[in-house]
Image 1 (cartoon, rainbow, N blue to C red):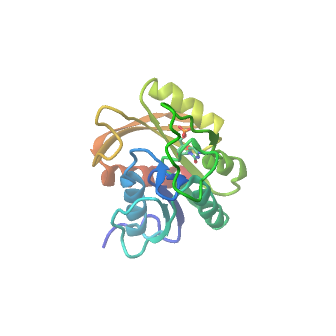
Image 2 (image 1 turned 90 degrees about the vertical axis):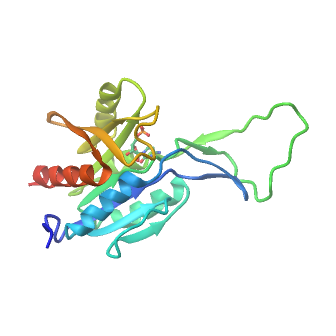
Image 3 (image 1 turned 180 degrees about the horizontal axis):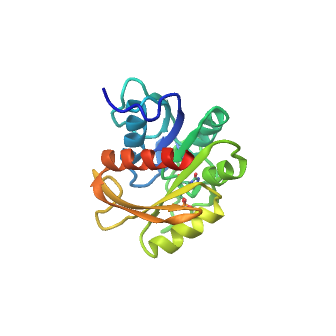
Length: 217
Ligand code: C5P
């Protein structure tokens, strides 16, 4: 029997890149595979938590994980907010699109006949920032995928989004997105940064969740 270190805990995790529709057959998205979020959900379930995984991805999950399939940031926000009040731990591992097309056409967009085309975008709501502002008893964690100035950018995000933990990782050049392993630094509001050595996403998920439990006391 495995160590049930999250017995009785309600955990909400998001995973994958959001898909922002232009028209019925096209969308904007990113390279996130959903592997890190899915690993967190599976490890939490194996550790006895009641887990809701709000995901855009189709990664294998344990039967005990309650999956909520979403596509856009707006759908993800609604699903996370529906489960927030009852949650003890919320981890936003999803790569939420910063912008979406200003309009989702209800028909396939046609070529304009011009050489170029400009697509108007509007900003998506920051789900994590809203959770950080709304949290009462919940432990709220986010990720920061950075290509440069990883620690400085992530530390700024920790403060700006008012979260309890920011997990920073370097992406680009074959690192982070869609890989089976990862290398991260845990940033806490009032503890020293904690680097976790390169390991499988499953191993890192276990280390991250154990650290969260230790800090929650
Ligand atoms: O600001 P940035 O996108 O780098 O922040 C990353 C963190 O914020 C991730 O945890 C991501 O899930 C979350 N996020 C969000 N809503 C957004 C953008 C990012 O919840 N619109």
